[in-house]
Length: 291
Image (cartoon, rainbow, N blue to C red; front, side, top):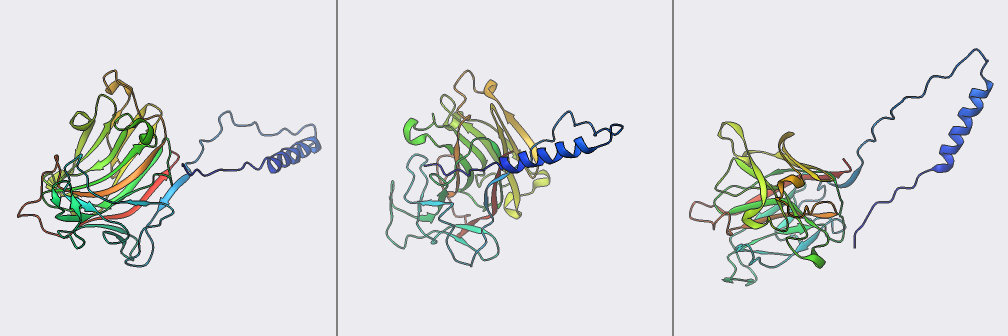
């Protein structure tokens, strides 16, 4: 189900260039000498493997070739929203952004684990469309604000359908809960370290700033046996197999991407009288490269 980009090496052109160089060297006077070859070849440049800059007409849905939209509620986290299909709660704004909107509404009598749903929102993923093991994974976003808001940019192991969660592994690139307006979290979940036992750290903006006040860039640099988190280019934690307490390191395999805006749940708590609606997670771009 994974869609991979395949690159064809142009061996014939490369061989021709070698032959040309060999002929030039043979024609040189005996007193001339070729420049010595460099000892170390230059580092291979990072290649873009997934790019979505969310360019399109205002109100249009996301690119279905890159994203699928999940629907339904989420009893596992006790979230309060119903994730809707199409562009009802996830649409382009015509200015190069994806806007995921959480609303206090239920226009279609959606049913949730607790009864009639009180909110709608959206959740998107790239399962079956894009997966990758390792590289630089980055999104520039402006998060919502308010008690009960729970925006996230994260990844799940592509084998979740066969091994389940948490054996699949989960890499949370960024999570924010509304009662911590100036703090985001980066976390690993795997077998033996999941849920509230996940392994991670928090990053807090200086000077009492709130993440909802502007756009910020959230990223992980992911390599075999290593995941490194950053906010606006500032690295704030690195995790390796030494951090998982002898449990399985579940992150040396392909993962897919997820963007969502949850309302309520065990961790953020439910919205209260101080929470205004609608609230929006605004995503400028999502970029993935090979390093």
